Length: 351
Image (cartoon, rainbow, N blue to C red; front, side):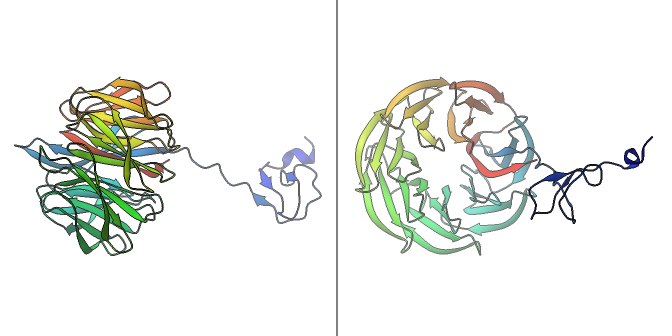
């Protein structure tokens, strides 16, 4: 055995001032020490999805279930207030905010530990929630008091309360965090509306008439359009955010409620509660290009940040349907929930 083979070989990256790679002392290299070990490759990661278990009206629940999207199984549950209907995750993925309809509060949990960090009192029957893209604010719609509570996420305190239209529900922020759009369900047969809030002043700067019982809102990544589901009109209103006027109305399935948009803004997914389907809208044409059967009484939908999968809560089936966005087909059904309604994905992943 020659002398060279007595050395153990280690992979090294050469001095940053050099332009070669070396294997320690086992190969010739003209670079000068110190040699720097190659860092290990980053671990593979996958997204987590958070689902509110609202239970039933007579027997409401108080949990959030956590789905590991690598296995499509429930890996944790988080205690929250009674009858949680929606959830929002901060843009950095660190915290979740869950309003509880019957507890009149918002639970904040740490996504790293799934532990509750605080509970924030808000208005009467809080229902919808959204986090501003800059992460500074959480807006909560108080369905029973016709207001929106503004939470400073740095201190987790309510800093102001904004009057909006009757029976507010879904909320969406523009990408620059400058405006928030709030769907006001109103009382039938009166048409619903959307309140536009200037987040710098926390005042309503416009009110836009839409269809009957508007439920949720999603805004395109370029901030130019808002899509609003009208549950009792079986339509989606398209709002031009520059003029705050409705520029199109799209027929969809029966009882549209939840909305989500692909990261590239090309498609909007609409959950039709009345006929157990999801309509897919092409935002270039505002036409429905696919209709996907899911479970019973579907409610909300979220799309993974990589744009590959959509997850839909099925309230009466106690399941979540997983849709392959490339094919618009259901590829998995996850059991084990209790009246699942709200659903969101953070920008986090676990290795």
